[in-house]
Length: 329
Length: 266
Image (cartoon, rainbow over all chains, first blue to last red; front, side, top):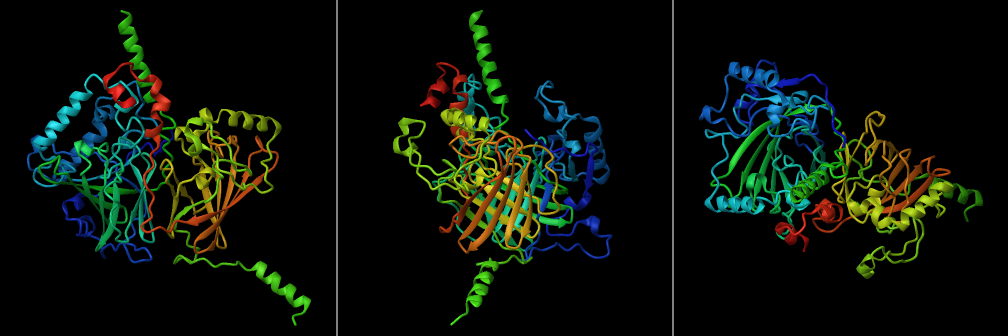
């Protein structure tokens, strides 16, 4: 496997109060500058979103409950939170349950603080007074409980029982919607005539998004990454994605998941990325999150996940060995 | 009546002129944007070949090898003696050894002529190749040529324009990929120079010069046409084949008599 290697020093881009502004407004930190920032254009007149971007983030998806309806930190609070994140917490705190024997997180740019992180004053990526994923419907509750029950005790039975990320089919953060990945949160945008292409390093999928107004794929064709169609609303690229598989399951969603993404370049170094997800079979209402993408130098490298996947067979053979040992007792 | 000299001049000037002038991008370069695919059997065997049985008789005609004229200039790949023996061995064990069977990234040039479409997204700044097979991608570096930082499956591509021809110099390829299902292979010393030349609104000439002194006695060349996929609303579809090779690769590690397992194995 090949991973992107970034400068070991944390390279931090503070966009400060920019995140407190609606996407269409100029970032406040540019107010001091003499002339407003004007988006570069592609030859066909659309905003130029091209280049390499990082969506590495230290902002949690959901707002910590103790913050209630507080959507933004003050500048002082944000500085304190960022300082804590970058100095006091270790990558192990961030990763949570992964065993320390797996990786030395300080190597190969695996730690998020080694990446370029666009800071935000938001207390959570999910916007609005609640800042949390809305409750799931009773139908979804039952579906998720049934699924968990069927899985219990069979988690290591076969490759097909493992999560799709571990199987190198789709990286969980790949989306859409695109979320920050544990590491290598890098993507490239290329705009050709009638197409916008978004290529994510994890795991080398290029989303080809036609902007020519064509209809979605027939409903019988389902894809892990769904089927994306783009159009421009003023200076914002809006991408509508449907036709997901049942197995994609973004945070428990079904194949009726509908994702709407908005890409707005707000300055030379930043795209404001916003997504709204809706799945009436899963959540009681749609929800929206927002995060900045910050410009990086690139290039992105090949992440040959399946080709180097020793983890999956080792996990399964470990489970078989444990069963044999248990049976021998 | 035209003089002999005049006819000669006419013929010479026709030969010197490109027969076809491709549509332009705003920056003046030829526009290669589109979805492309070959109409040949190079993925089965680069060399000229008659029809043949596939490695699995159960697949019948579906799994048989379709005949093809071949795409190698001079018909034969100039293997060094030891490498020729290895190619034969590869062919005999192609079901176990061909990386395509395991849904591995195809490498270059094989990605070009697999029986799946690929898409070129070209802008003034960037050039991206996306292949339907296994979701393989290549980012073509069009600025100053850089040395491959590390070996990879799809290699490191430095691109430049030679008139209307896109020339891509590919290095940093690992030794894991093959050229076709016939066992044609290479080492990690592989160096590929590809040339994409528009020759009509619907076709491009594709050439690749292959150099690998550890495997071949001299550089050799393949040449074929790429056709523009023009079906209404044509698009690359997802072909994540990893899922289809899991039973083959990991089935032996499945828990015996497991409930979930029995269901999945059907």
